[in-house]
Amino acid sequence: MLKTATKWCLLCLLLEAVLLSATAATPATVKRIVIRGPEQVTDGWVRTDGVASFTAPTLAGHGRAWSAYDHILMRFDLTSVMAMRHGRVRKAVLRLHVLEAKNPQRKVTHVAPAMTRWNTHATASSPLGDKSGWPQRAGHANVRYTMRPELETGKVICQPGKIDFEITEMVSRWLYRGMPNYGLMVSTSPAIFGKPDQGTWSLLCAASEAKEGTRPALIIDMEGVPPSPHEAESRALALYPSASLPPVRDPYYMVYYNAGSRAQWRQLRTINMTTYSGQGVWLAPRGVANLTWAEGGPIDWLPDRTAYQHYYTNVAQSNAIGFCGHESNLPGAQMDWLGDAFRAAERAFPERLSAYYYRGESKMAQAAGQKHIDLLIQEGYTSTHKQFPLRGFAIGLEGIKKRIDTARACGAIERHVVMLGHICRPEDYHPGHALTPANLDTLIGELRRYAPEMPGIGFYGANGQQLALDCDRLAHKHFVEPAPEMVILEPQFEATLATAHVVVRVEATAKSNREISVYRWFIDNRLVAETDQPDYLWDLRGEHPGRHWITVHAVDSGFHRSAIQIPVRVAFGQRAEP
Image 1 (cartoon, one colour):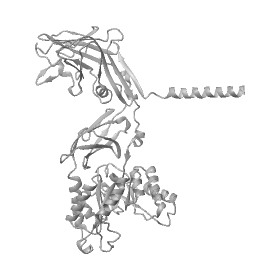
Image 2 (spheres, one colour):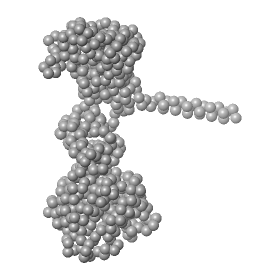
Image 3 (cartoon, rainbow, N blue to C red):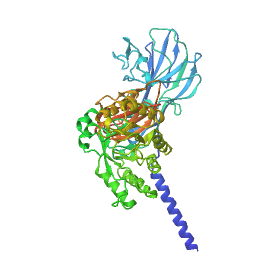
């Protein structure tokens, strides 16, 4: 027993040692770097009467009416941060120790990055102590103008003690966005000309030459690790076939089945998707996605679940854009085979666009709601070509809405469009059942009101070339025209991007008193983020160098969607720390 117990004790100790070793080897999620002391910090103050000091143990930030006003300058050496080993700045704080504070007027003390290179010879009239000058506004130079106004932060200081300023954005720009590290200015004073009365206060802080524990400190919490280009697809929220095709370049699915000739296609300016077309190679460079056929069944050469999974995976592998499952008549539980086939294809080829001709099957709506099918194309016909019987093919508006309700209940409403039809010549309809531009207009308008979330519309073409043009026009009227106006403010078209982080910023304006509710951000064929703000921080360390496409979608409160796209060139490489 003693020998057995000893073995168990040794085994437990060994296991504990292994676990401790593994824990120690795992890098911390957040690493704190503290920068302080005269070896890492250059600081001093300048006064509007010409006096300055960069060697005193205190930093003067006083204001004296009718006399002179002080500004504090400090610069932290950031090389110890080793920013390229980390993902981002989680938080950065400037910590000052206030030795003296009298502020009867409760003036705000501001902190901002300096825009001007300065040294320890600086004065209130020159950043280098020579003939160089501080920035100008309206033709007048002033030391206070070196503060970058859009990054200013401030606090009211009324008593001695520790005071913290959060400066995360400033430090992030130094480390990752190429902003020169010219340090910070701390000032309670506005721009001073002459000897005016801008108030009187006292502010004295410990300098980097002061005793330990009171020196200014820059406290930076770094988080995560840099992204890898090889993991770009696995980080994406969703993948699509191409940035040049819907739903990336265009935010809507505008589907037209059986358009026919190239001459017809050239006239369909809004339509961007079709299925089973022999024109696919010609259409794709023109921004139209053609989805290839996938059998829905039942059929004898797909006898079981495994056969369906292999078949759909092979179809996805063989077609770079994607595929569309034809409507299925599989009985009962066999419908699960089809859902599993879509899941298998999606797992193997997540970038392929997958669609299904949907007739209200809840299992297929569930698969779409679970994101295994990109698009349900509802066969929502209210009229048919006279060669087809109305009964059984035309389901009417109420039938369409019932299928919409099923998709909505399964969480698939934003992956669902209604295909209207048939689009025929007037003489090819059943008597009294012809579709016209007017009743198509009414029908599309009703669908937009009933299910505004739906990302597009579809049409079943049956040799109705003239009515097809009206379909294209009405799709534009009901979907594109009400969409927000949008412009990419930064980066510029064809910009070369060479910093670790780049901010993509757009300006979107919704129409008819609506508001923008969500922005979707794409890099190439990857959906990388969804936000409620018009900017996205792009980490270029996670991209391969070369040409990339930035696409942004803006969706308003009425589910109207717009898209804008620009090309850029990534030229970022590992560089020296700031």
